[in-house]
Length: 572
Image 1 (cartoon, rainbow, N blue to C red):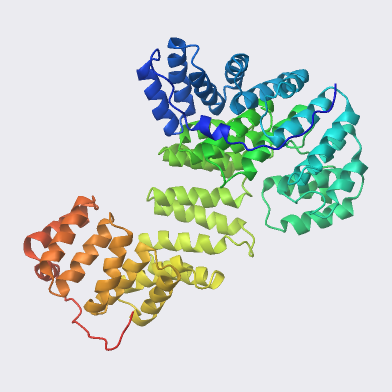
Image 2 (cartoon, rainbow, N blue to C red; image 1 turned 135 degrees about the vertical axis):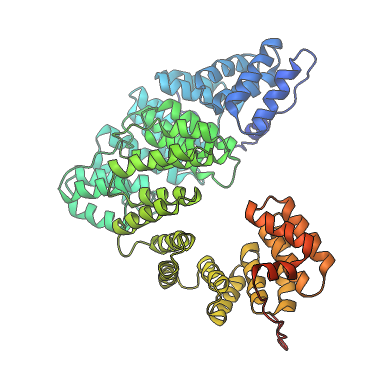
């Protein structure tokens, strides 16, 4: 068996397949096909696979349908079905990158490494990186270590792939038990060896501990992660402090896991450069190869969340075992997926259980507070934020956000003194933060307090975020409260441009127009505000303004509006 030269080429074909090109529909089940296309557009690979399979049954020799069906199977995690269709497609003389991904993943899962060589020798390629690493790991799987190291070196020597080749070579050396050689690679400068990541640093730490170099490991873990660490890193640090080798479930221990790591890494590094539906194919391949690896489940689940498939994401996060070090992070992801899916009670239950099983994990309390706040259970949210602040270190960067969030819940509970204290503490920790400046400034104005300070806060916030409709609305509203009605017109109109469907902002613009004598336009804005579904109490007040006008509503409420104030030469 000879080393196959590694060839670079552009991976454009896969993008066309993911886009679901239209086949000839003469013999196709048009209903199933159209339903499949719609599911694919929505990122629902599982539904698309079912519909495409029905269409393929009606037209089994349609190669375009074969491509689309296997893509949907791979995207939904049904890799074996995708591989079967992929092999049939390749026999027709076609070549499809998605098919080759599925075939390579299935071969790695089954340990049939010769299949990878046969596929590559036949010219059925995935891409330069995965072809090279697939070949190298296949040699490891066959026990041909010299050829494996030569293949890794070939990847290292390929322009742009040095980092990946070095990392996988170090993993292979670790499997072989050559820890000194692996350490030598991890210790190289990043431009020659491996760019430091959470995974690569963790792997290096384990190798150092196996070599007995605990002092060096202590220095690296402190420099790399600092003191504010999650449970996974805390477990590694604690093992090092105890002079023990940390147990890493994410550590590559066999060639299949090595290739799975390659697929997952590619789905990670292309974030922001490729569509999530494309990246999900790599993540699902990794998950199929190494179903015991928590990171592969988490990577696929996050992509499913990004595609709006929150129920599937929650189920995928749930695949991480409770005794895995990554379990807490997976549970945080599952709770977020449940929240996005509208299942708030289940999200609360997941986070509540997490605070019980991991009471020293502050992010669980913080996340629980956020869900309670979204559900307007402000008392429970406050308790969760209290617990998070108790557990987080004094220098944790998230503390400003927790004070800001707890300030909002205090304000909603009409506990203004506590709310103001939290907002000001948030500003101490994060000076000039536009969100905090806006919330505190708006609240002060709404309470009729400290108008000058509030105006300065909101003007600073508006300068920092001129495209925030909420902040520009606050600017217009503080002018309104100060009686500077003419000054309020421009920012309020701008706020409506930025947030055209916000009932509160449209209502505010209507009030501003009324005060400057533009009553027809005021009524138009109030009518618009009603069409956007405001809260019932606000809706009743807007209807009353439409019936009798703002002046009469103020009179009924016993409110005296601020007299108009003209500000000469003001450019705000």
